[in-house]
Amino acid sequence: MLAMIQKEFRELRRDRRTMAMIIVFPLIMLLIFGYAATFNVDSIPTAVLGPNAQQAADQGLTAQGADLFDIVIVDPSGTSSTAQDLLRDRKAQVAIATDSQPPTAYIDGSSIFAAQAATAALGQLGDQVTVEILYNPDLTTSWVLIPPLIGYILMFIGTVVASIGLVKERENGTLEQLAVMPLSPGSVIFGKVAPYFIIGAIDLAVLTILSMILFDIPFVGSAFLFAAGAGLFLLVVLGVGVLISTVSQNTGQAIQLAIFFLVPQILLSGMIFPLSAVSWAIRWLAYVFPLTYYTVISQGIVLRGAGFDSLWPQFLVLAVMAIVVFTAAVVRFRSDLTPHRSERADTDGVTE
Amino acid sequence: MTFGTDDVTVSFGEVTALEAITVELSAGEITAVVGADGAGKTTLMQVLAGLVDPESGSVSAPGADRLGYLPSGAGSWKNLTVAQNVAFVGAAYGLTGADLAIRADPILERAGLAHVTDRLAEQLSGGMRKKLGVVLALLHSPDLLILDEPTTGVDPVSRVELWRMISEAVVNGATAIMTTTYTDEAERAGSVVLLSEGHVLLSGTADDLIAAVPGNVGIVDSPTDRSMAWRVGPVFHEWFPDGSPDDVVPLESDLEDVCIVADLASQVAIEGGGQ
Image (cartoon, rainbow over all chains, first blue to last red):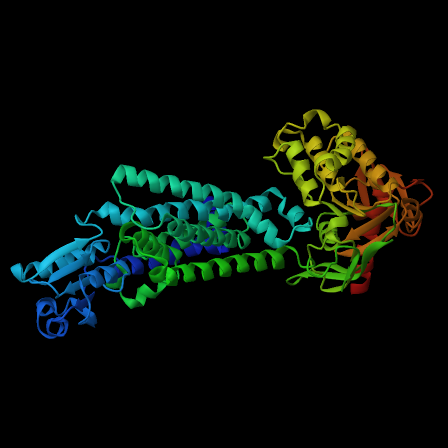
């Protein structure tokens, strides 16, 4: 048995990725869990609108929760309609319109923990303010959680499946053949990804429709815009999978790397824990992950009916991520397997 | 048209896999590369296929569309049927529909695979799968055929059929280079390259190589020097660098003896140089 233990230690010592998985990953998870796992919202972006906006901002309604409500917009010309637009476009999570008596505080129900904190704080004002929760009036958790959760499920499957795609070719000894055939690295990689993309898109459509039926989730935004955002997100996660595939020698390595990429996103994407409550020491990591942007897109379109004019930054980031990961995968594939392809002509060629 | 390598050196980290290798491949000829494990045979194939970048030297090979390559593995996609493998590789080389059928049907027939086109590649026997790999490499009538151990693990009958397929491609104008662990089949090649630890020990026709053996090889029951002898059946073959003694039956060497003697001579030279 001692010989067996010794042999395992020797193999482990040479398997750096497994060692990292055993030693570094728990530390990273502890840090992320420790800093990210909080439902306590300390600051809510708040807009104050209407003729008494400045007065309300200075000393009125929001003074009740001065520490909680972070006044980001004061617009004396704003109306109730403006307030609702600001929430829809995620420029504020609470918007107080003073064009009515008593003033109305509109709360974004798609930001569930902020909404709960705001409701509790404003409730202390009694009849001085009317509270109206938009987009998720009953603050139903499933409405908020399921749209990004579908993305996470597809990301998990898509990344893992794509990450073992090229590795399987390597393990089966056919990767060299692909590299020698007159197929560009881009063709090989996009050819690998296309079937997963099509199946993933169908999966996503089915899961979204099913969630609307089973959980009564409304879909108030543009289906086309949602499809575009979901498509970009799928491209990114499949691209990450292929990139993992190009740097892995076997299926085990690929799955290990995929886990490194996938697990932190459960906590660090705003899907479960509100990012605004997470310390910046960890929060910056969230902006590296595609699910963070898909969470904003899916909740925005499905629940609030947000349009491209407010979601374009998320679309832009996902598009840039897709370009970066696919370029990296193609470059990696080309440099790893086809050093001469760019040099050899289609006919006879001599390389130095 | 000749292909080959000129003074090619390949290193992987601190390990030199090939050192100053020059191999000239003649059109219409099969070149067999033989050598022990780790001699650099596969690396040489990968250099010619453009999969490994030489540190120095030059490689002359056709572009990807005129190259046929069979790696040391099975060389086919196990979860595709024979027909689907052929369709995929054909499409990659621009062969589809009737053009593909005209090209593929006779090769599949000759390979004995025409009756199993609906069978998954992983369900084929080892020999049939290798033949499928060669079919895929030959499909687009390449100018240069690079085959890495196409006959390893293949039964003798299938080996003969594989050789027939390769020979026909060469008769039709292709240039072929293949690695093999079987010296008897290397003797059938037009030229032979003997690699050892990344160096070319000998090259030429099999007859040239046999004629170039220094000293004599004799048959002995009990070797005079175990380090210079190797067992062949019930007896030993022993290399005598300075000629065999009178009581030893001299032997007409075959390529296997040549390979062993060349390796021994190389070791003797290295040891001699080190003293």
